[in-house]
Image 1: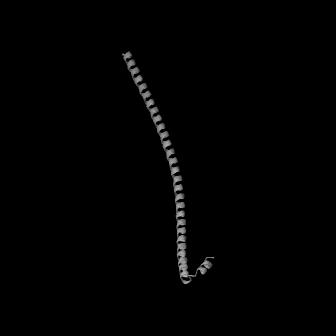
Image 2: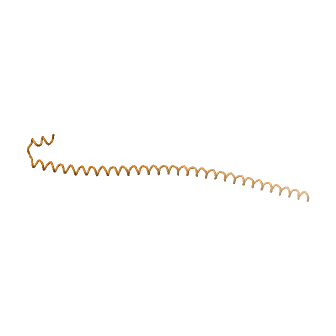
Image 3: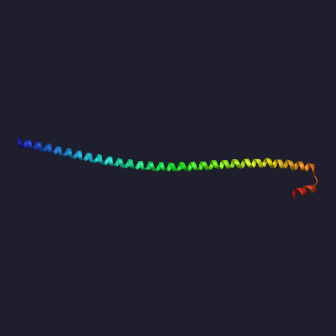
Length: 115
């Protein structure tokens, strides 16, 4: 009977030891998984930060280029206005030329006017 109880106690101790070993292994696996997740999350966070920084640089570049294009558009508009004014003056000068040629068709006066 004592022998049976000793065997039973040994069996229970072995069962207890196996459960504790299983618990330690589970805790170790959980700790490893937690560390792997933290490492993964840190990498993702770093990549997101880099992408965000690149986005800011691209936004600044886009804004700079948009301002440059706006400035070029304004300059083109100014030049077009100047060209239109010059075309109007040219049309007026041509009308004056045609008018003066009608008034004075003498070729000698034409040569003097050109000089």
